[in-house]
Length: 216
Image (cartoon, rainbow, N blue to C red; front, side, top):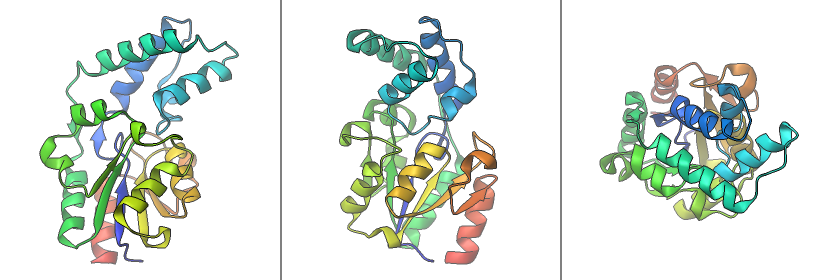
């Protein structure tokens, strides 16, 4: 299958940011009495911040603190995260550039707000994408299919022409519910968490090698 469109999740796919997100969330949620591990954050990657927090409080049997408290918590988390420099995965940018060369449409589809996108993705890389869908562009985030359906609509492609690159269970559910083919990377979670994907790759080199050999 040679796709017309290649859609990328951001955190853990384009940028090596998930450990930093996890550290910030653990700190702010710890202030509310929640002692979390990285896996608690990684399992929910792809959800909006609010969805993730609501789900964590529910799982731990604690009441959601309310909208005002959440907004303060979210701002503190963003401030902590934005103190860090975030690295791009070098081969991710190579893959995006290769797709452009091959005349494959590209989109960035993330559960992060636009401020986070602009913080971690340099403008010259962001400009490579034909569409960018962030948390503020949808009413329902991952695992709902809306983010990927919106990206497909923006690119003018059908699900059967679309390949998604993800790294999280929620993102895989979103992509598959939208009808797309989904490849997953083991950047933050091992393969057993990514079983819903059509194919799982250990790293970007394995994914890029497969794409170049099978779809050029």
